[in-house]
Image 1 (cartoon, protein in one colour):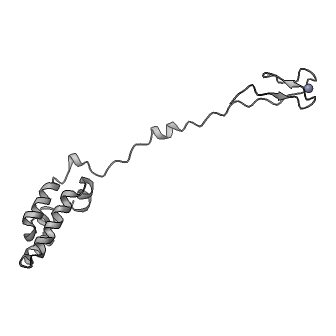
Image 2 (image 1 turned 60 degrees about the vertical axis):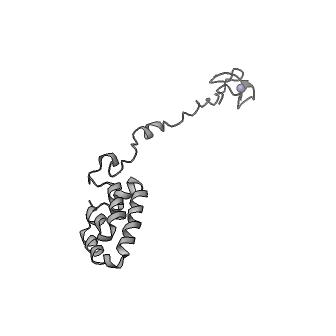
Image 3 (image 1 turned 120 degrees about the vertical axis):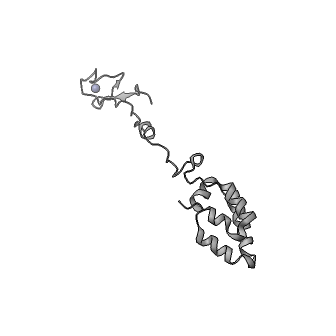
Length: 131
Ligand SMILES: [Zn+2]
């Protein structure tokens, strides 16, 4: 935006150059040239905006529960609910143990083990680890 845009006197119509405050021909007061608009300093807003902290730090997992261990337990010993006991769900673990003869817990454990292993660390700790 240019500050030397051409203005004309409102009284006599003469061109008024530069930043004259009054017409050099008739002496009428000229409208002031508005200073260029300063863009609002929005950077400060970003500067104070910290990225949202995750609820846990995967590298400092407070539960001490490993996604890999839980997954392997589910796949190898899922029929007896080993992964459920490991993840702090003994009730579910006992249920698996009771129904182990149906092979359903074995299949469920296998599926859950794969889910644990393929889940992101975030999903695993949020959904499956009992705090
Ligand atoms: Zn004038």
